[in-house]
Length: 470
Image (cartoon, rainbow, N blue to C red; front, side, top):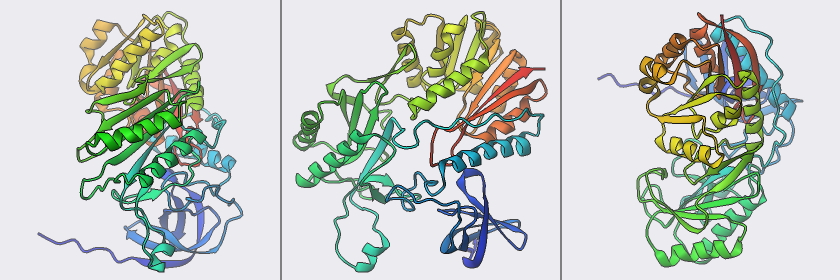
């Protein structure tokens, strides 16, 4: 077997960063070859780039020295910027971030879809650019990520940490002092848990040894002020575990749902494990217009509640429902979009792969006295077929919100055969959305395009496209 030789890295000096590309990378050029630059560069920077990968028509690398900084830059607001894997665009003004995201949508649709397009509507910015998330997940570790200064000093440091995974490092955790993604109670609870653990000598989890009591901490909140905390323990020690849970219950009476999980598996996922409610309800309530959504520890709900509301309004407007339509909501998740538009439809049919999400959708339908929505779980490629369409009647409108990979070709084939009047395509990945639009082009044309920024200071962008049957 032929052994692959590892490419040698090398440095290119005094390279001008020209633009921002998809996935948040910057673009530079050297001798007519494109360079995709990772890290905290900005258009206009002049940098030295360490090239880590080289192909025939492009290179990849990251900045190792800045000769001059772009006039575009602003001072990042977070002390963890440049180390933490989140909020990578803090050094770029927000209005420029949204402009880059808008252009990302335009480029994807023009270059990949290659279909006739209307003018892409202005991107909808987020009303909040800090503390906008309703859910964060933190990890305990006995192997904290050390800064270069700490390493160079050669001193002994407490390696216990509670924070976020370092990019590409499954066992290294960046200890977070203050996070700007979730409101003040999130920071207070996280720091209180860590301080309690240090004071009472609770062991932090070791992902290499698979030992340690404290493994994971999830904090969720809702727009009406409800608060959920889930502590994931890596083993069983009732005295120490219940000590921490009682401490949280006493110190933070505003927690409306306090839960814990015992997880001794090889990974942090707990969707197949029992979640035990220690105090309060086993869920929190999120509200949107006149609807209530029951959100449990395992439930999926858009992590930017305020902007999700705007996204759903656009989806409803594009659907143009009159009360007479049969609507399919593909990849419905917990049914939030389906239930949001149900009042305007004759019948809603939601399909989703995750059975647990479908159960949440059914519960939320009952909670809101919605009787014209039904939900089905299964592999979309198998459940959505000609027999299903015949049984549940041909859709007049299809709303689809697939994962980043986009829709499977089998699903697109069924959509084309069902031939609804309208398709409203919600996507978190304009590139795969563009690919799917090209496959739908034989029967549909693009009537409207509206990007939505759900995640400020990141490269991620949502996009809503309305397609009409030709």
